[in-house]
Length: 423
Image 1: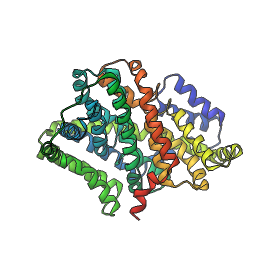
Image 2: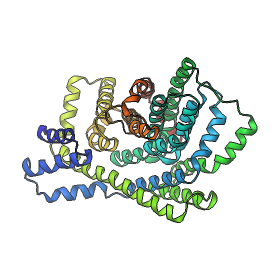
Image 3: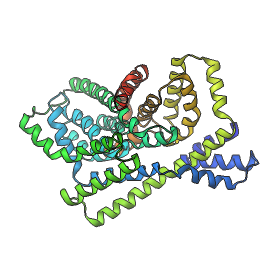
Image 4: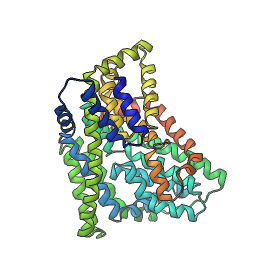
C-alpha cells in the first residue's frame, strides 16, 4: 500500500496531472504488486463511470455554460445590487450575492468564478477596490457553487455514497447561506477599514424591476430541486430539464446565443466533462485497489485506536480533508476518500446528508488554499494578477469559511433540517 501511495505522490511531484497520477499508481500496483490481470484496469475504470446518474454532470455543466452565455449574469448582478449594494463595500457584497445566485444555476465553482468575475472585477477596480482583494473574495464566493444546490460535487457524492442527491441538494441550502454570510462579514470589515464605497439604496420599485429581469433564470434551482423532491424526475433528468430550460431562455427568450455558439459551448462542455469523468474513472480504479487491500478496515482500526469519540473522529477527518485540499482536485478526493471513510462514519452514527454536505463545504475551502486552489487560480486569471498577489487577502476569507465549516460540523441540524422536512 505504501508503494501505491508513493507512486502517486512521486507522479504528482513530477507535475503529472492528478488524474494520470492516480491511474499510474493503479497500473503500477496491478503490474508489480498484484496477480490480478491487467485487463482489470480497463474494467474498473469503465465500471467507475458506468452510471446513469453521472450523466447529470455534463448536463448541469451545459446548463451553466449556456446560462453564462445567455445574458443571465448581468441580470443576476443587477438584482443582487438592489438587495445588498447599499451596505458598506457594496460591490463586494454584490459579488458574494451574485455568486450565490449564479451558483444556484451553474452548480460549478469555476463556472461561478468565471461568469461573475468577468463582470464584477472591472467594476470593482473602477471603484477603487484592490484587485488582489477582489480576486480572493471572488475565489471564495465562487466556490459557494460547490455547496449551494444544484452542485455537481453533490452529484458525485450522491453516487459515491448511494444517498439521495435531492436531499444533499436540500442540505446545502443553509450551509451555503452561512458561508456566504461569513464572506460578507469579512468584506464589511475590509470595506469599513479601507473606506470602500457603497451604492445608493435601491427603491422598492428598483428591486421589483431587477427581480422581474432575473426571475426566469432564478427559477432554475426551484425547478430542479422541486422536481427532484417531488419525485417528478431524477437528478439526471433534472440536469436535462435544466439544460433544456437554459437553452430555451438563452436562444429564444433573450436571444443571446446563436446556433453556432451553442455547438461551440457543447464542445467545450464535452471536453470539461471528459476531464471530470476521467478523474472519476482513474479514482475508481484507485479506490478498488484500496478496497482490495482492506484499506477501509485498516484506516478504521487506526482511527479508532486514536480515539472512539464521535467528535474527535469527525475533526480528524475534516483536518485530513483540509490538508488534501491543498494538493488534490475536489472530485479525486471524493472518489478516493469516501469509500474508505463513509462506512466508518456510518458506524459512528454520522448522518449521511450531514457527512456529504460537510465534505462539500470543506472542499470549497480547499478550492481556495494554495498551492492547488483551483477557484482562486481561476479568479486571479480573470483579474489578470499573479496568483501569489492574492495570498495576503485569502487568509481572512478562508478563515471565515472555516468558521462556517466549524458551525456545520458542530450543529448537524443546520444541514439536516430542510431535508428532514421533505420526508
